[in-house]
Amino acid sequence: MKVGFYGHVRQYHNIKKEIDDNIAKVLESGEYVQGPMNKQFEKELAAFHGMKHAIGTGNGTDAIWLALMGLGIGPGDEVITNANTFFATAEAIWIAGAIAVLIDCDPKTKCIDPAKIEAAITPKTKCIIPVHLYGQCADMPAIKKIADKHKLFIIEDNAQAIDAAGDTFKIGELSDAMTTSFIIQKNLGTFGDSGAILTNNEQINKVTRLLRAHGSPARNVHSFGFNSRLDDIHAGILSAKLKHIHEWNDQRGKWAARYTAGLKTPKNFLLPYAKPGYRHVWHLYAIEVKDAAKRDAFVDFLVKNGVDAKTHYSIAIHKQAGYPWGKGARIVGSLANAEHNAATCVSLPMFPELKAEEVDYVIAKCLEWDAAQ
Ligand SMILES: *Cc1c(COP(=O)(O)O)cnc(C)c1O
Image 1: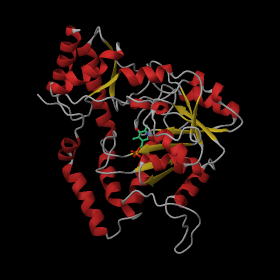
Image 2: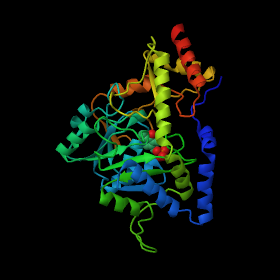
Image 3: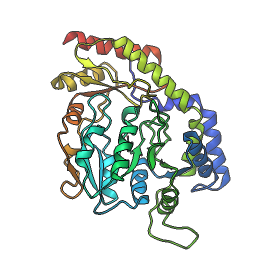
Image 4: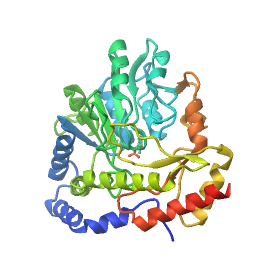
């Protein structure tokens, strides 16, 4: 059996008419950039989150640096985030001209460890960017407490956890802005690139709307800006998919529960930790191979058996040779948990359109490998 890592085409087939109808609507409208479909989707997205403003962007990376610039953060400023995230989180800080200050993650949730934040704060620190990694929220109340004490902004990088929630808080509620990505592999993804900023903050709304479109408040009038917009065709596709996201995330939760029940108590790997009371939306089902030396062989075994397993992310940000070290980032404290995660993580296929027999096949192959060690 072959089990893919993504179900993009299955998902398209399941709601083909809704997507095709919206694409046709855009094509017939004659307006393809910041047209009516973009405005409609921005309204729907803001309403979905119970927030005032959604600002569509060209991708999720742009959403982060646009939000930073919307807060006036740039050269000379420092922004704290965790070392185990997709590269774009740190990259966006660098694009904004600020220094990324990388700290360690919580060993269980893999999200930023609030206990490590204060040691990284300097007079230059302006913002904390927690990442809701793999579909589970960071500990926002703890982060908010620190941010309030030190008068720092918070931007939630929510590229991986649309529709997630904490036990006592909602995503987007305890920060100045939240960003997301709609690249196809995210829980809510279009057939290409796009992203968004969500905020209740009027300044961020106003400034990022200008920045994303050539700093232009009216035709022929410009201040400094960029071009990073959410095209109307993508807005139409996302509008159709947004109606299903909650149910799709529920289905991811069912597959996660099936993996967890089926894998039981393996000898050689640890199952993902889901925080009690949180709504985890299972962007990834990431397990941890206890012996890092065996991780790559395990992935090879799965791939040879038709299971498209991947690693997220096998090189922590501070180990990336390509990062502009010295001027773009610095490290605070031990990053042992982030490094351990990079060395041991394996992501199993996870998407709503999986079939029970596919999940069971992946479980069987994992157990077969486990028994052979
Ligand atoms: C995907 C992702 C991004 C970047 O989004 P793009 O749309 O690919 O630019 C940023 N942060 C995290 C955590 C992501 O997973």
